[in-house]
Amino acid sequence: MSEGTSHLIDSHSEGDQDASLHPLALRLREILNLCSKSVKTGDLNESAEAVSKVVDFLNSVSSAAVSDPDSQDSKEKDAVMVLTELMRFISSPSLDQEVIDALSFELPKAVAKFGGVSHKCQELVESLVSHLISTCNPRDMLSVLCDALGSPDKMVLTPAYVVPILTGLSKVFLCIQRRVFEQLKAAVPGILNALKVVSSELDDEEKNSITDLISRVIGIATSMQSASQKLEGRRKEELNALLGLFVLQIMALLSRGMTNELQVQSCVPLVVQLSRFLPVCGLSYIGLITGCDIDAFTNSVCGEDSDDDYASCFSYVKHGGALTVIWGYTYDEVSKAAEEDLAGVKDKLCSSKTKTWEAVGMLKYILSSVDQPWLLKKHAIDFLLCIMDRNTSQNCIDDHTDCLIYMPSLFSSIKAIEMVIIYAPDAELRKNAFSALKRVLADIPSYQRFDILKGLLTNNNFPSMIAILLDLVREEMRKDIEIIKVENTADKSTPFWSADVLEFVELVLKPPKGGPPSLPEDSDAERQTTLGCYQRTLYVGLTWSGFYLCGR
Image (cartoon, rainbow, N blue to C red; front, top):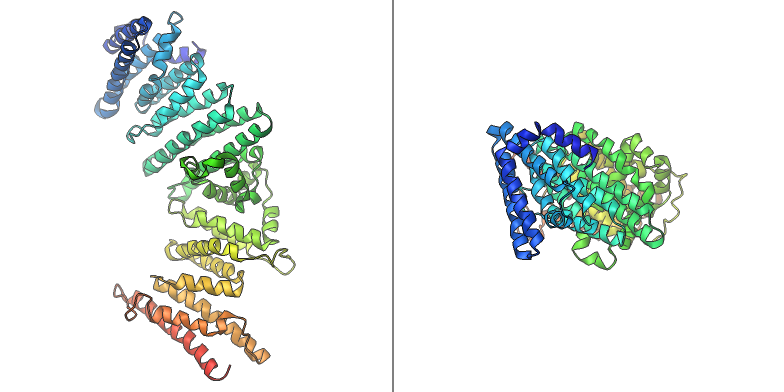
């Protein structure tokens, strides 16, 4: 028995005599002794039934302790006595290994339910799990702990239940000696899926518990790093790639559901710890914000599994990649932990139009997410404005690259910016998002810009957004008119000075689904906004028609 374990037992019991006289402790001792005898008989059915009785007893005690808050003190005392007795039994030098092995397949899940009783119980649970790891087969314990995380009962999957299991996994990872990458790869989905479920179920009052939860997961990442250091060649690269995706998924889950600035700032120390893994894995800010590193790591880890459930456990890695860079952009200590130079990253993005477009495409994962806080979306918009602020001295070395392959991603990113303009809670963010929208559109060649504006206008149900889009088209036309006045000719190569622009008029005045244009009756303000849309629409249509009839 370890010194830490002995200390816990001594501190939670009121002497050997009191523990032995406690009725629940006596009952558990009786059940455990019967279990030991059954296991030694070698009868598998009898052994399984005996272990099941131990589990049923533990479940009854934990359920009573968690479900009866009115008698919390007495129930906690019962739970502590039972866990202490259980620890005495499995740590006895005279206990046969076959008995411990039989119990080890069921105990972690049963004792983890005591984690929600009290902090004392959680400490004892962690000691019990740690002892089982030190005395049983690591591969078996890895499977048992992963199975415990896979409980379908959401009432069980609470931070208090999950934390001791995560701590156990961080220890058992270090004990794996053979087929390390394969076994850790198999364990990761269960860890991430459990973390995803638990973090999504937390209410505002429980958000603080996410800190302890993520800290334990970071412990697992640290164990993965230690395991990687013992490998060489391809397996080392694969495990580093797995660790990188693991860290990015945690980064995305960390800030989900944060509702205020205080909650966001409380995450910074955890983000700093996570960022320290980036250089170890070979991840860079430029590779993350363009998505290149993420695609390479995903292909390395998932391989042929890219179309099945395995890849789904990394569903937020692109969110995490973009967030990692935005955290570093916002907090100097984060970028320092990642060993990154933000100025250099911005220069690389500004010097390459395709890299800029790739970054815009990655930022949509933050801007379109309903789970990410507005504070991080604000910083994402600021970063977007920063990388779009090119000047003539910055040579975009790949201006002639075929841009069509980037248009679907840019369109979805512009739609994400549009959602910020519509739903952002403060005027400054809406204003900055509008500036970002204009800069991204201006960076796109005219014909593709025309198609994107048309796509944004199609089936748009927000009158204010329709007005904004029409203003953008009107501004494009105004620029063309200025060119006509100066050069005394019309540039036939621009779609904003062609008959196609009248399609914008039809999209508003002649809805695709037929019938007359409808004016909403929800409020006078909304009606006025819509009327303004139609005035802009008529201006666009009549301006072009007038110049066309005059012979252009």
